[in-house]
View 1: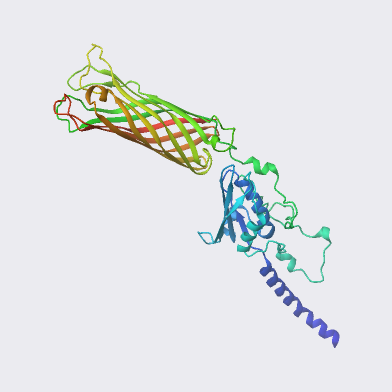
View 2: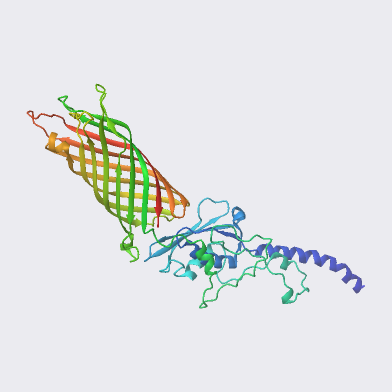
Length: 446
């Protein structure tokens, strides 16, 4: 009788054990996580350190399954050579905004967290994980029969996605056998890192370009007119297409010094018109004309590094010479009443840029307080004052690591006011001179 009762009870225990095992394994299964590529020039190094700790406790997934992960970890490393910091974001699945965000210090070289235990314990706590807890066993282990034991060498190796492809690509696929997950680091023990080749292979440019050269062509319109001209003895001017080849260069003379001196750049630029001639409707003769522009000054990187991703800000100051001249016709006649102003001005302003991959956008605004107006002041209006403004907006497209294409729209306006007397030969309240158009150029950096 006892033997029969034991035979009946065994089918009852097996389903119960399976159900309990399945329940336990589901409760103990670790959350899945996707560690996205970190922003910033040292982002890959910091990302490797964060992913090493996260993937030791959570099940990291590859890029193609990122949308199905329970959590997405993102980071942005910012700062300069003296002080770096990283902002970590944790976004649960189905949410558009992070549920947890903290900013932590980074080591002086920018390649690791200054206090990894404190920073990563907060991140793991937000994911419902304990920094010192071992990763949960695979669900299949919980379904094994209690009396079934396997030799250590016969245990199934857990398939874990290698945490990172630091170039932004996917980790190895699930069909590939990966090495066992590393145990969580113990306090006081040296922290392991990924192979140096993984960190440096996708690292961006280590420093800003030492030399930058831009060669291109501007196509501009010009509108010059007087305000309240009382005697018709002066001419206005209009040109619909002034073609101006241009060249610009920037040099970092202290690039190797480090710190703020390495952020300074000497810059210069020159542009001149080609094939420009002036005519009036009452005559068939034309007059050779030219527009020239010369710039020189100093520029400094206030935020970010040229060529790197993210937001950048620059400040600049210098000198501008901008002149329009009209020569004699082939019959040696002169076009009377057409002024050739030669503006000399200080030039100071700010420029902003936003880089994302091979494409970047930029904008620049400059103030041009006039120091002189050349012939306009020397011959026509002795008491002249003026001010100018210049703006530019455009995009940069990377063609090669050292070569890019720049497309931009620009406008420069000079406004002058005159102080005259009733006995003066020329009477007007002021003048407006506007150059506007577009630029296409190739930019090389070394």
